[in-house]
Image 1 (cartoon, helix red, strand yellow):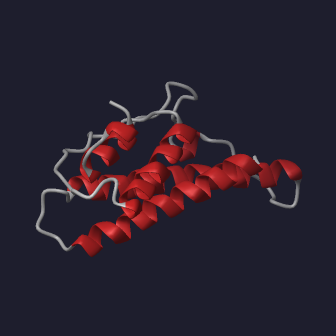
Image 2 (image 1 turned 90 degrees about the vertical axis):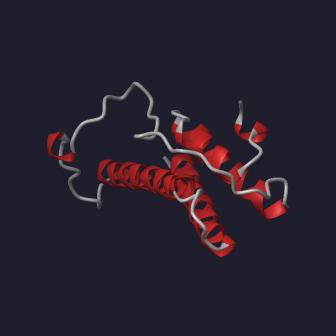
Length: 135
């Protein structure tokens, strides 16, 4: 299945959570948001999200305490490191919004709840793509 083949909101965002490449994940989240707004996806559905969102095999994920310090943002190297860190934050924000939508898909919640979180997922994906393009 592809994100475009998903027929419910929950299935579509579960697919996003299972997508590893960051740029593909962001594009998929934006696609789901467009499909929801256009009415192409109109059912919320139910989907259990994965325990952890998918990530590429490389680079190896390391705890922040094991990462080198960024240094001063006044240098090109420092600015690049800062933008890179922000891109990671945006990627995690995409996953959080998608997870909330999938995790609460089986609950009796107002449609506005899902509308709001779809907007968050879409905006975080847009932010990620802007940072990726800048880097």
